[in-house]
Length: 121
Image 1 (tube, rainbow, N blue to C red):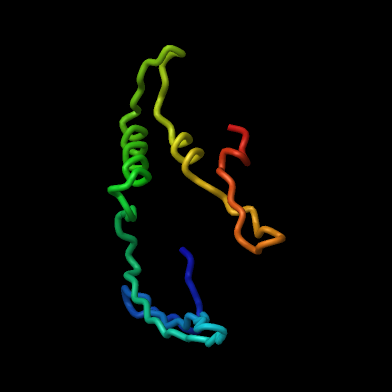
Image 2: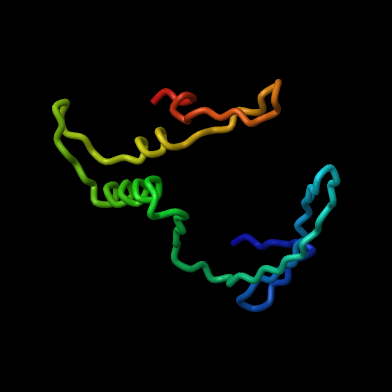
């Protein structure tokens, strides 16, 4: 069992409570202002069942993700001209995911590439 110690954490019975500061900046025209937001978090110490929230479930990525998870859970197979295929997670992950490589030296904008360009799959 792991115990967490942090100056902003209070462990009281079955609940962990903490207070945090989130610091960011707001840009208005050519003026940059620092902004601080104070937040309070309260979580139960008992671990509940796992839940997954899929933002945009009605879109292509959400539906594909759920269909892939169900196909894997049910060990689905299907026949093609190349033989029997079995469900796996790689297709959706490789085709839909992108990775940030860094910033363009000229413009400073982010440079992204599909995940399948980086891995030999």
